[in-house]
Amino acid sequence: MGAPAGAVAAALEGDPEAFRVLYRDIQPRLLRYLRFLVRDDAEDVASETWLQAARDLHGFRGDYDGFRAWITTIARHRAMDHLRRAARRPPPAPVAAGELAFLAAPDDTAAGALEAISTGAALRMIAALPPDQAEAVLLRSVMGLDASSAARIAGKRPGAIRTAACRGLRTLASRLGEPMTQRVTKEGDLTLKDLR
Amino acid sequence: MRTRQSHQITRKSAERLLDGSAGSGPEQLVRVLAAATAPGRERELAGEQAAVAAFEANHHLRPAATSRRRKMISSPLPRLITSKAVALSLAAFAGGGVAVAAGTGAFTGPGAVHGGASGGGGVNVAAPPSAGASLHARQGTGAGAGTGSTPRVTHTPSPGTTPAPPPGGPTAPPGTAALCRRLAGEAASAGSSVLTRSGLERALAGGTLPRVLGRPEFASLIIEVRAAVAVPDYCALLLSLPALPQPGDLTQIPRAVLAEILAALPPGTLSQILTGLPTATVAQVLGELPPGTLSRILTELPPSALSAILTRLPEPVLSRILTEIPATTLAQVLTELPAGSLATVLTKLPASALATVLASLPAGALATVLTTLPASALSAVLSTLPAGTAAQILKELPPSVLSGILAEIPSSLLPQLPLG
Image (cartoon, rainbow over all chains, first blue to last red):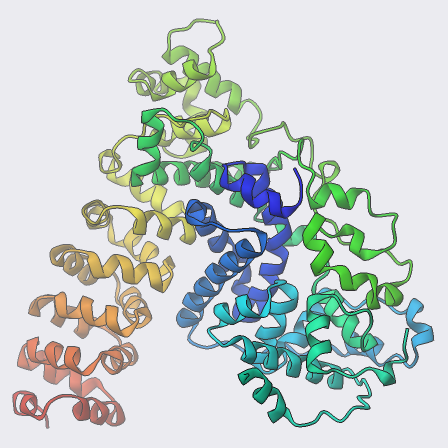
């Protein structure tokens, strides 16, 4: 079995091992994205998503990127169902002090000695961004979707996704204490560019 | 690497960072993104077997071209049977504490790649084959510098970590597969000769099976599967047969058994089944379930499935269901429905059922329901109710909700409402 690109074609042929490859590749990303949307229900929603994907796969046509976008769309719909049911989402959990400590590490030269930041801590930091920024960053980076796929899924224009993702990264960087020598200027410019 | 002071997050560099194609970037930010996109850990893959089993249940019959198999695929019923069998087999595994086989023998995906990567030091080696090339490429840049030679513990299941799976099928408590084979052998009166795959299939689907299954030696099988009717499907799954036995009619299954099977299904599977069945079948199934099971099922369904099911039920069944479930379930069900579905459901009910339903709702849920209803449906509901019930219901509402409702409905309706 080859790359996930081939896995999609093989799964469409009915090969369960190909479907397993897709699951292993995509499920962790999906779970991380869903945790932002539905917190503790992420696992349940992810299970429902895969069951629906298994059932509806025969109606899917496309490549590996398309498959990721397709299943992310399913996941978001299921998550919205859950949110409607839960009525409101609790605020994101704060990042524990210990997790921030290493981030304040003084110097690049000490980088090799630093502990790796945990995936959970990174995701909580992203989830603590304004929701549209958080979702844009997650769709673009964690789900690995391009801006136009991410836009379709989030129900926005591609430009709006790019803007939100860019702002998200700036916010993250500033919260991480990165000096940003460049003045973060003219957010309006971004919007104008988007509109072109 | 440039010093971090020189990094700027422009629109363009943000895109590159998100694509994982940035050569460098603000150190800490790169590290956060790398951590967020780190390869999956084993605990993130807990649902793997269920997902693959669902896939197999839906797809493994597709390459075969016999008309019977085609029929099985197109009919909604087999979905129930296969999903049921999957659910039951998974439940049996959980109960037996036996590892579910990953069937990874021929698998060369991320797990296998990872197996060779642990000594590499670079995190991106552990990424899945080509997705990794784009998604995890950044880990070789910023994160690589940050983590140095410290290998991340990012296991995906590999053949070595799964306890001795027999290739191809799920495992079950020891001896169960053998018991299934014996059951099929006895049903086919095959004596001690070994049945072929198609022989096994025929035997499990055959008419003699129920009688043979009644023998004491197979009691453990029934206990394990929890319902005799599901045994053939369970065995077929266990023996990795290419086609499941011909499914019986869902509505022929004894009510108590059906209730047990449906109540044991996870919500996702359950909603998949109920929304996939023809309306008449759903109506018959739900219409015959005891209130307790019904209540459990309705509260577990996600709102979308609940809407899809309730809005298409014929009025008598709908009335019966809504008036028989406990008030707390009723409140939960009605407050979860989106406005459109709520309107469809409530305006379908005859006056008596509507009165019973609304009168049994707790005040809070009643307020939610009435304020959710579109104005036209609200008018229809209030004018359908007997005057006494309407008065009683309106009295329950807090003044703010009441005034909101009164503002919504046409003034022509007001004289009919016993206010004050």
